[in-house]
Amino acid sequence: MTDPLVPPEETPPVEGSIAEAHEERPDGGVWEHPGIWLWLVIAGAVIVAAFFIARLVSL
Picture (tube, rainbow, N blue to C red):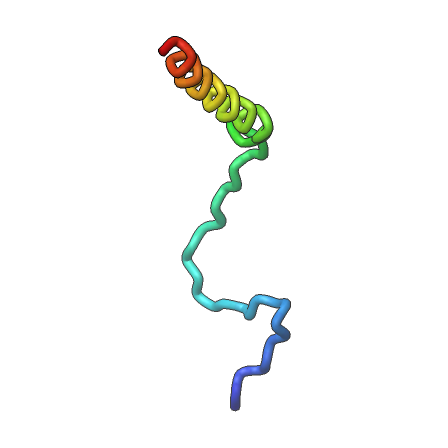
């Protein structure tokens, strides 16, 4: 007898699996507010650009 077909949305049953369920990480952490990191990167780029502009003006 063939195995019954399982709809695409469902996971077929597994027999004899010895794997344990993994614990999920809590939400948040470093990447909870990506806007802050984006602002820091942009601020750093502006500071570096200002350094080069100041050197160009001082010539």
